[in-house]
Image (cartoon, rainbow, N blue to C red; front, side, top):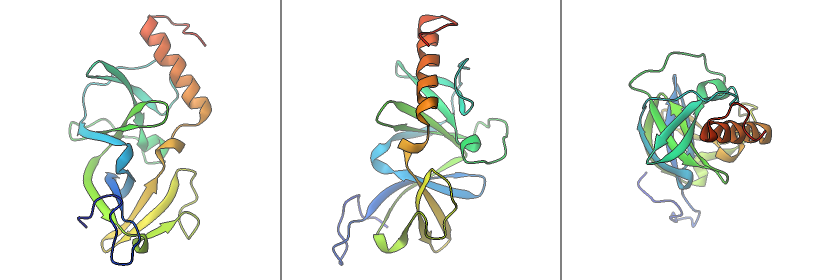
Length: 172
């Protein structure tokens, strides 16, 4: 699995590069193109008035980045933050986000013969766009753009604005 994103296999079909991470014993993946980096968890500053799946914010090189609790979004049981947890820093059309995960597993490159689109016996969730069938199990592929609803995006923007101005009111 060493082919880069967009590489062509012998059949001419493009391979897809994905960053794989885990929550509990389930593996998930995001397109490599939207991921900036992964790092060990750092101190998270609470962000009042943020949507429930936002744990708070981090400062990464002067950029304020909201931390998304994927355990809450993907219906995993809550648990306390661990020093071994990771943050996957990724970029949506609107902003950078830090996704709290148990562990990052690395990057894989898979051909279309290993991918199944959503709707083909996959869990019915608005975030799953497909799955990869590997020898050691299933990896659910998620679309980062679907992670936050428009209302959550707006509420997050208001909470970040309020934090930046030091106001409890914000502009919302």
